[in-house]
Length: 194
Image (cartoon, rainbow, N blue to C red):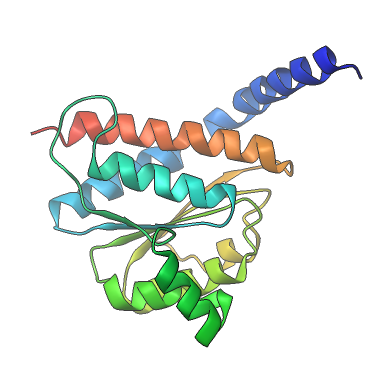
């Protein structure tokens, strides 16, 4: 393939995944929005986490909650567990990398809070530990993942929500995750604007 064909194939593959996936994930996205609105109305907060590009997604949605998405509205409580490098590196150094999110959830999490965990594979050990800690705190988990949700999906129960892109290519999964973030944020802007 030449450069133009590679570029075009990226756009076409993205369109195909959008078309094949949207109807499958709509109910989970809508349920996530309703659950997040309930969280806001019950004085809860959003805790987000992810690795690599998923870390950027976690920070992205957290910043949209705190600041705003597209319209003016009140600030909403959210913490990206990826943002405090001193805390993350001290936990990784003193304990293990797999606890960088779970120990923060143990410190900040409470009932009525929501954990939003981003993982393209669903198998990151620090995400698994984060979900386990959220369960102990009686928090709801919204898992945003790819492929089949991996081991993370197996930790979810009936109160939790999974939004899974049934694809194996990381870049395409991450592109869909960004659309999910923006769809959630647009609904939050509209339905929490007071």
